[in-house]
Every structure is written in C-alpha cells, then in structure tokens.
Image (cartoon, rainbow over all chains, first blue to last red; front, side):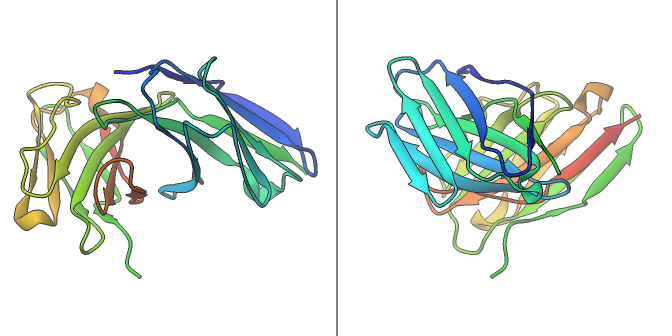
Length: 110
Length: 114
C-alpha cells in the first residue's frame, strides 16, 4: 500500500493556530482527506481537497496541498479545547483504495 | 438520520476463539469498508464491498479474516482462531459509491484478545 505519514503528537495553547502535517507517496492521488476522531467516537470527515487545488478554506480550517512535495497540511485557527482529538489524513490511490496516516493527537492546553 | 452502527461496541475473547463483528451501513449506501486501527498505528484498510461486485479483499492480513455482506446491506467481519495481535478497534464505513465519495464511519468495535 501507499505510505501516508504524520507526526504522532501536537500540543498547542488555546487560541493559537494548530498546523498538522502529512506526507504521502502516491503521485496519482486525486483526493486527499482530513478526518477527526474524538474519544469514543467514529471518524468524522472534516474536509477534503482535490489534487488540482493548492488551498481550501472552510471557516477555521485551511488545507494546503503541495503536490510536488506530496505534502498536505491542516491549519486550525483559534484552536479550542473542543478541537482536542486525533486527526487523520487519508489519500485515495489510483486503484481507488483509501490509505490513512497514523493520526496526529492534538492536545489543546487551556 | 441513522448513521453507521456497529456491534458489539466492545469484545473480549480468549486467544484461539472465533469472533464476529457486525456493521449496519447507512441505508442506501452501496459501498461498505472495514478498517482496523491498532494501538499506535494508523488505520489499516481490510476489505471493500461495492454493490454486487466481488469484494476487494486485498487488505485482509491473513486467511483467518473473512467478511460477508448479505443482501447488499449488513456486513459481518469474522476472525477465526484469534491471536493477541488481532486486538484493535475495527471500524466500518459506508458511502454512496466509490471511495472518492464521502465515507461515513461507525463508532467501531474494540476487540481485546487475551
């Protein structure tokens, strides 16, 4: 399968911006996703981006895609304690399989 | 509306026993997926059902794992002769079509093999 990599942990202070990074290997990816997993809950789709886009903004969320470097990031502005969760990036390969990263555990410090 | 449901929410079993995990997808969704999330690992794709087509089993880790989807709706993931390394959260997701469609995830079944 494809490799999708993320750092495991991120801590930020409430009110600061969070930036969660992801790298992937499949050059044929057309869709890339960010999911949020809160404790005891299933995965929640936050946002997705097409590979022909560089940026997508949705309220406090900004997704940046550098297709040349195969690098995806999720920026959360004005991070709140309710944003504490595990964030997964995922990409769809050329065979329509979905591959997830290891997840980044975001801890928001009040 | 009703989302994806899974049962049981937790399962503790002894090594060597068989277990069955159930997934009820969102009504009308033709695509159904099983994933596994082991402690400290990312999500691992297991199997994908799309309509009446033969399932994509490329992610199943061994022949002890199998899955069925009856009537194009409910799916059962069966693990035979469980091993301790099978301990994980098993997540089911459904979508209205291909993997490029939004996948809606269930809450998962937490399996612990003693």
